Image (cartoon, rainbow, N blue to C red):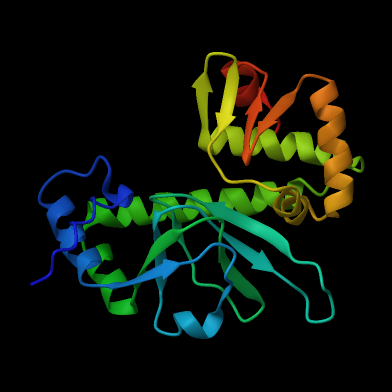
Length: 224
């Protein structure tokens, strides 16, 4: 007898109505689930049967690395409910903390696409992922690293931030090394930039959580 607690419904299904919600839930439940340990990279062969990945718990990042380069770059990060393409041979999937993804086969994807409502949801989520990749590329434009860090923190606050009493808390487990991978810089450079941003009262850090000392309106209005 299986005494494991039932898993909560996928955030991918938020807002969907019956019977689409039940149909999609059954397809996801029948698909392979993959538990990810923090910072343990998953390579393309682990997803040979995958057409799409659904982030169910935690946060993950897709990292790209050139064959002759020791430094990787985060091209997209994703939290619960996000939909991703599986990593290519030049990419890895890395969990930022204990995470879980559902691996959708081509057949499962096609079953979801058979419903107009579910097809719209898939297109919406893939469009969000594309927008994140475009943001990641645009973030390489500023020449000053402090501006790259500032812009990336604002982007993360826009996607994963929660308004608190004295600012916007970014609910993503961040480290200086991870921020460096997100902006294509070194950890030491990011540390100096964050120190300067803290002196400017733009951001404060508590453990792996950052809080921007700005208003929600300024986050929405910030360059993407």
